[in-house]
Image 1 (cartoon, rainbow, N blue to C red):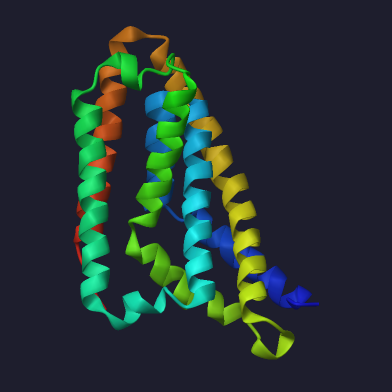
Image 2: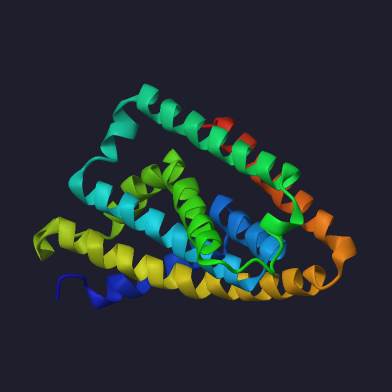
Length: 210
């Protein structure tokens, strides 16, 4: 078997611990869910998974090592991600209820929510470094193709993410739907989502202590 079952079990437990830990993706999904309802939250989860899949592919091809080798490349992507999240925050603060209200279910809006979640994940270099540092701990070169092992592990991680963050989206989205049914709270929803986006932008800009 390409991935040892015992090692895979440990990996699943590690994935559960990681996905249950509050982080940028979790906060993003929660803010979308509360701000725009269950559908927006679930679409955000799928967008995050799509972005993570690209990071996993890059890790399998060795591209993620660029961020470990080049501080400049890391900083460029970090600043781009912060600017993008800041723009999303500005949109939340300035757009009207017609755009951010949960009653807006047009396919165009669904695509926007999905793509924004995916871009938010892709423009976070910490995700790329996570794949570079986390996945190798569960890879055994002697077991076969490293790229295939990365693909399998990434698939498992995405499935765990779908379950955990999906449940978070459903729960937080229920709160968002309840608030949306009460017009006086709609402005609070938009400001909550905008504040979270702004906080995430700042968090990405603040370097971690090493």
